[in-house]
Each structure stands twice: as structure tokens, then as C-alpha cells.
Image (spheres, rainbow, N blue to C red):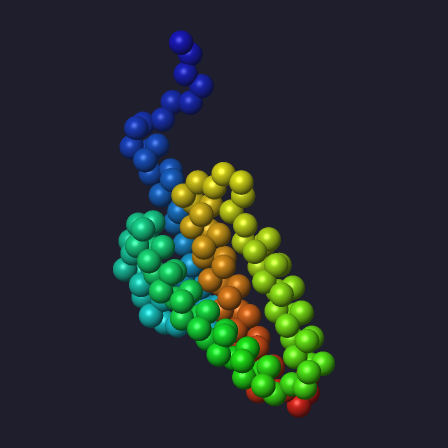
Length: 140
């Protein structure tokens, strides 16, 4: 039987780690609103998927709370028409984020981790955008 690819067995193990290392910046980011503790957690994870998932989960919980808190503040500042526009904008953002961060029909570990990290990044960016809107609501 003919071999098409001849790799040392150690290389096969290192290849997924190489790709994971390339994707690490997607999780250890300078995304607005992301806490330094998240970057430290990712650094401590050593690229271990379960540890990275834990880091993302902790930060995503924080970012979701942040997003809900600022969304409520903004909603309270608008009249009924503004609140309806805000609701529609939030629903559109949520649909876009879900489509943008979708891991695909049969995701592997890498795709699932990327999708989870994407959801975190997009949530942190959205919370930062709403905070900016809240600070400048007279201009909105």
C-alpha cells in the first residue's frame, strides 16, 4: 500500500496544536471591554481546550451580564418608539452574531472553540458599543 503523506507520528500530534496556536489570538484579544483576567486565564490554559472553554465561559457570563445591564439602562432612556427600535436592533444583532459565529453543521473541537470565542468577542464588542451609545445618547 502506497503512503501519500509520510509524517513522523509526533508531527501528527503537533499539527493540531500548531493550528490551535494560530487561533489563540482570537481568544486572547484586545477586544474592547474584555477583562485582563480573561487574557491571563487564556495564558494559563496552555492551549488546553477544556481550560480555554472554561476561560471563555467565565468571561462570556461577565460580558452577557454587562450587555444586559447596559441594554436596560439604554431602554430606560428611550421613549416607546426608541425602545422598539432598540429591541429590533438587538434582535438583528443577535441573529447576525449567531450566523457569524456558527460553527457549522458538524463542528469539531476547533470549530466549536472558535464559535465560542467568536460569541464572546461579539458580545464584548456589542456591550462596548451600547456603553458608547449610553454615554453619547444625546447624539444618538
